[in-house]
Image 1: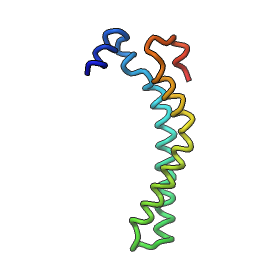
Image 2: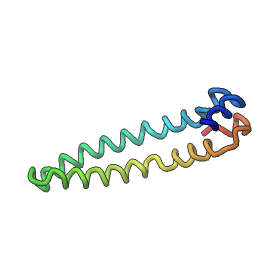
Image 3: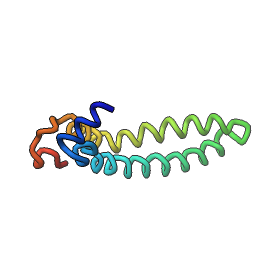
Length: 97
C-alpha cells in the first residue's frame, strides 16, 4: 500500500492506472480469439472423442485456444509491458502505443 500512496501523492490517479488502456486493448482481441476458438474446438473435440471424454476435448480446446490467443496478443502485451515499466517521470509521448 505504501507504493500506491506514493504514486498517488506524486503522480495522481493517472499514475496509478498507467498502462490500463493498453491492457484493455490487449484483453479484447485476446478474449475474442480464446473464447471463439475454444467453443469451436470443444465442439469438434466432442465429435471426435465422443461424449465419454468431454474432459479431453476441454483440455485440448483450452490448450490450443490459449496458445492461439497469446500468439495474437503477444505484440500488444510487449508494448503494454514496456509502457508500464517506464519511469513515472517519462514524458507523455513515450506512453503511447
